[in-house]
Every structure is written in structure tokens, then in C-alpha cells.
Image (cartoon, rainbow, N blue to C red; front, side, top):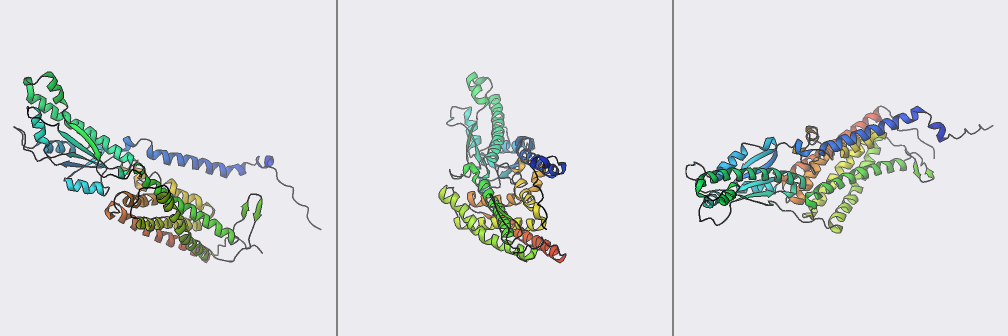
Length: 422
């Protein structure tokens, strides 16, 4: 005689069970709190957090010292600026013009303050009838380092240049003494013209230096989402997860397979499918949206390897942590990666916790390489060499960690679930 069917549960009854609420409430609350703290904590006050932003300081002045002085004005100004690092916000780097341009071209500095040739002579001529041009200080920006980083550097260099102008003005006003008219003294009080221009220009379709960040984010998301889709798809096809679409529910017969072989299958599929996803990402960005990009073969190879490293990492984490693997990999690759990438807010302008994360967080390692390819002529010293190394390290770690965990589970006899009959 068949057993009577159990009555269907009702939502109103289940809602009265405190244990049903406990886990979702705690997890949702923790996620909301952590996401808020991590994301907003990295960008809420970059000016207050700013420390040691690298800026080139160039003295190209070859003029003779003014009467009664041992060094020309260019030397005096750059020495004074270098000795006062803007309250610790700037890391002034005294460089030659060639060295400064090289560091701008490789993304090692966020900008430059240049005292041009003939500066002392043009200042000395101001107090005479032979003045033909206003003395100039040149500020060079580096938009390839991102709009915010370049802007912060421009703010610091502008303040330093204005302070230098007032210093020169005091000297000129004192030397002019009573001979100058009140109008002349007013003009001499702040005599320098400050000119700002791009020291390393980038294309107009580069998102003001933000396409590198968003392209990196696309690669990370392609690897992250692709890895999870592949993982779920394989589990469903092998009968280890239900397939539910709308009102339709199916469960395939379970294929006998251990954890190690399952992970191998998922990783091989990840390597194959990532070829498609990264190609589509690049086609959409470069061919359809006309993003400024050169060295396209290199960009494609790099994009594939970067997304593959993320995808393999996702598979390893899912294999090790099971059901919560997607949450763990989300924190590893996205939640902790975005604020510590240094791609939107310079790492010199974020709290120390994020600078610590940047040493190993994948998004930082990948964004440096993308930035080097898109903006800095794929120079190795612009971050590309380091990025290749970290991609290789990431792939090796994913393989070692993933297979070490699945081999351990298999040796211990931890089956994923009891096989279901056909």
C-alpha cells in the first residue's frame, strides 16, 4: 500500500522558522557591509591619503647666476621644491630632460615640472627694458596614468610652480626697489607664466586614460563569469547539479568521475572557451567601439592569457571550496581587486591596506600590462614584464592549488554526492 504524499509546505508557515532566516540574513548583511567598506574606503578621500606621488623635476636652465647669487634661478627653484615634498604628497625626482621624458613614456611618473632653458636670463630681463617674453615654467601631465592620477600631479606641480613664481617675484620686487612704478611692482610680484601640456599624449578614444582599467575589468569578468558558467555547465551535464529553466527541471544521470578528473575537464574547457570570449571582448572594444589600441596581436595574446589565468583560478577555488567557491572567487578577483588595482585611483592615494593588497591582487597585475600595451608602447619597464611574470605565477598557482585540493579529497574518499540512476 503506497504511502500518502506529504502535504506541500506553505511560505507563510516556513517564514516563521528563524533558522530559515539565519544564514541568508547573516551572509547578505556581511556582504553589504564588506562591499561598502572596501569599495568606498579606497576612493572616499584620495587627497587626504595621497603620499609620495612620483613627479619628475627638471632643471634645464643654463643661464648665469644673477648678481650676488652663486647658482642660477633654475637650480635654486628646483632645489627648494625638492626639499619640500608638498607635505609628503609628492616624491620629486630630479631628472634630466631626457630622463624625465623616458619616465613619462614608461609611466613611472605622473607628471613633471620643468624649468626651461634660458629661464634665469628671461627673469633677469624683466627688470630691464630688454624684456621680450614672460618667464615660463612648464607642467607636463601623463594622462596614460589615469585622469585622477594625472590631475593630482597637476595640482601639486601647479602649487609648486605658483610658490616659485612668488619667490622669484619677491626677489625682483626687492631689486627693483623705488625705481619701479606701482604697476610694474604688481606685475613683478607674480612674474612667471605657468604652461600645462601633455608630456606623454594618448589617443582621443582612450577614455581620458580609463580604457585600460575598463578593458582589464572586462578581461577579469570574462574569466570570472566564464569560469563559473563552465563549472556549473559541467556539473549539470555530468549529473552533479540540477538544471532548472523556468518551470522546467531536469536531472541528468550521474557520470562516475572523481574530483581531479572533473577539475581537469573544466580547466581544459576553460582554456578553449576563453579563446572565444577574449576574441569577442577585443573585437567589441577595438573593432566595434573603435577604442585606441595598437600592437593588436600582442594585445590579443595578453588578453587571452590574462582571462585564462582568472578562469583557471576560479575553477581551482570552486573545486576547493565547493558551494561557496563563487563567493570566494568574487572576493579574490573583483571585490578586493577593484579598489587595489591602482587603475582609477593611484595607489599612492589609497589607504595602506589597499597598497598591501596590490602586491598580489590579480587586477593590479593585469591592469599594469594592459596600460603598458595601450598607452606606453608595450614597454616592459612600463609594467608589462611584471604582468607577464604574475600571469605565469597565477596560472601555476591555480593548477597546483586546484589539483592538490582535488587529489586530497579523492584520497580521503570525499565523494561529491551519491550517483543518481538513469
